[in-house]
Amino acid sequence: MKQAKSIINITDIQRKSKINQRLVRYIVKNSVNKLYCGYYEIDIIFCSENYIKTLNKTYRNQNKATDVLSFEIKEWENGVYHIGEIYISPSVAQKNYLKNREFWEKSEWISLNGDNYEYKDENKESRPRYYYLKGFRREIALLVIHGILHLFGYVHDEEHKMNLDDEDYDEDMKNMQNFLYKELNWKL
Image 1 (cartoon, rainbow, N blue to C red):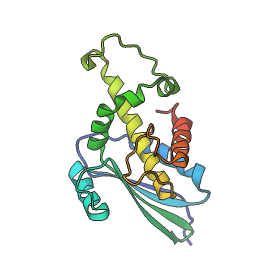
Image 2 (image 1 turned 60 degrees about the vertical axis):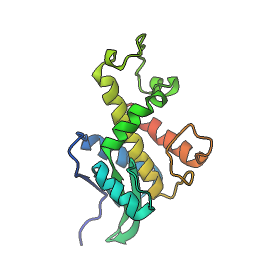
Image 3 (image 1 turned 180 degrees about the horizontal axis):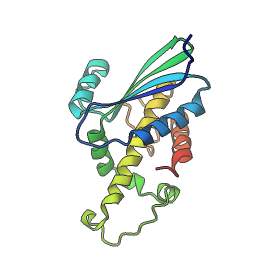
Image 4 (image 1 turned 45 degrees about the vertical axis):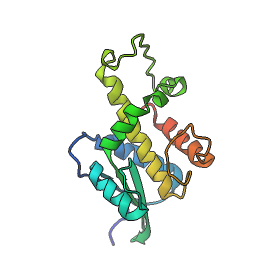
């Protein structure tokens, strides 16, 4: 009989953004291991904006692109628990990051990540390029964690808006998401 082991499948079917699969694997492994003890399989699919829009229309009746969708599978096979699939659109994630970057610039998040940059000129061209790349990596990390939490039954407001400052955001989801993110922050 084949030895059971945990499997993290990462598929990249988009072309706009380079995905650090090693970092994604690290995030998945460390997040899932805090939520589940045992062998598991999980699929992370990075897709285009159009692809995720089609999924969102088909499965949630929302005719718009979103940044992350999770689909529970919850099947056992040969001692391995197949948790589910997470679809992430990096192009939507990038837009969301640029639109909501003030969230990442809050002192509590900045100090957690060692990004104690001070910019007197708020013109984005004056900021180094890595400033946005680090933010985009953080956005992808948060979306991976967010998708994993959905697969484990964590939920938030009915509109599924991922806004950590929103009072309607479910406290359990928010607390677990923050915990998992902070556990990973040194690597990001």
